[in-house]
Image (cartoon, rainbow, N blue to C red; front, side, top):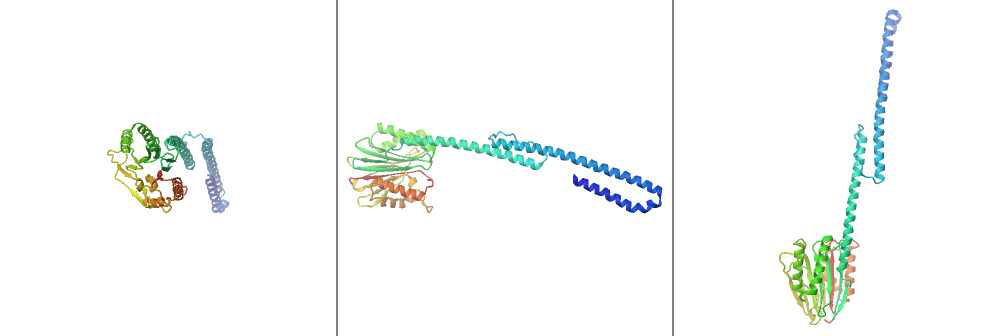
Length: 371
């Protein structure tokens, strides 16, 4: 507006000077003409002054209006920013304004407030899920063995379990209540997390009931457990199981497999064999179990494990695999079962280097001390 005022004044002055320079000689010669022109010049000067004043008043009025609108917008944004700083995130959308830049700034402030609301809601949901997972993990810890090492009737075993998340789909169990045998079970429910942990908790309860009332035959035990899981999960979850029953009288080991990884067996000579059998997990439509029996002269030490151990990622980025795991097992043969387990745990730690696992892992080392 001030620029307009300057231009108007400059034009008026220029017109006046030009008129005087052109008509000056004529005015000196013709008094009447000079009087008329002087009057006309005065009239033009008054018009120009009026226009200048009008322009100045208009510019002042518009500046006042814009200043008022800018002030209102700034006060509104200042209040909104203070509210956000105080933790009040129930702000209304910004009011429209004729100043585009301030309107854009107000919309950005409102968008930031909405993002904070979403972030806080996400954190609340995450905290609730973590709390539920922590409860699930606490429940799961109740049915994992309190004693991870056991010696009974010439057998010694040591087990290890590590979850990939707060809750795990892996679990293991050993039972030596019956003097005739020792039973070891490793299970892996599909997936990992709260859902899988709930299935393992239920399966553990089923197993405890079956062991009290079901016959000692391990195949019949897994068939009964299969029916319970199938009824509970309706095929949504399956469970791979490796069940070992160590006869304390005959010294014969019975292995029943339901979709679990191979069983590594070390003979008294030191030769290691991997035993596999076609089978399917518990809880599916068509259950297929495989079973094997090993006499003491063919099973000096046994390694049973879930697939998370064989799929453990090495520092090279490649999976551990059955071949490397077999060499780990072979290297531990000179150690007692507890030391052998601890040696494998150290190797696992070296592979993970403090990074979280991609899958739960569980393994048990078993030795027949009379082999």
